Length: 255
Image 1: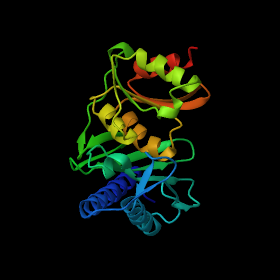
Image 2 (image 1 turned 90 degrees about the vertical axis):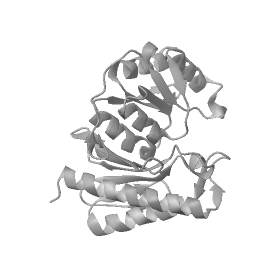
Image 3 (image 1 turned 90 degrees about the horizontal axis):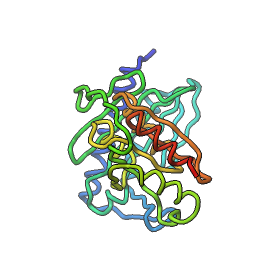
Image 4 (image 1 turned 135 degrees about the horizontal axis):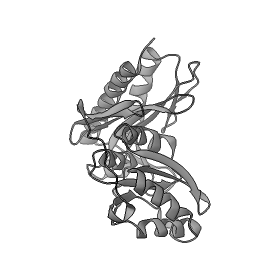
């Protein structure tokens, strides 16, 4: 039976291989396809990186389930699921920006167990979870301090079609209470900035599991918290320092 440290080491190996493969393919040139909108794109690198991860998991964790952003799906018998985002921030990836990564999470029956992220531009590797203290390149991340939303940098994204209506109004309530705001285009990399204390709170609505679990696990492993709440007719995912998270959730819900 493997322990959480062994799972973490495997997760690190997987995202480093996937991230380096995607970076090599980008340097050589990859074709781009659109999925749901002009800003929702996928490349051959996304698919190749996901296939690399799923092949290794089939060999090394055959009893675990798999869910991947690009369609990977396998049932399991262990009660555990690997959630894969082979390239998070594909728009950035395609357009030569550096704010993208490869990410994976291991989720148990009741909670996320760990997340791992590789940021190829900095060759930085993160791993951590609720019971696994988060590290960057093997060095412990300092535990996050706390601060109110009025003193916090929020990182977020809202797709332009949602600017109007109840979801847009909830978004404005939350961002208006923050000290400052960033939209950088990779939810998992945004989480890494929160986990390192560079930003303070992440929030976004309708977040897929592969965009949520890897990053929030590492934030929690650095002393942060994570919540999901419904406001404006959609579900919001919020993570970061405790007071700012609570105040974002309150602002989203206060109509």
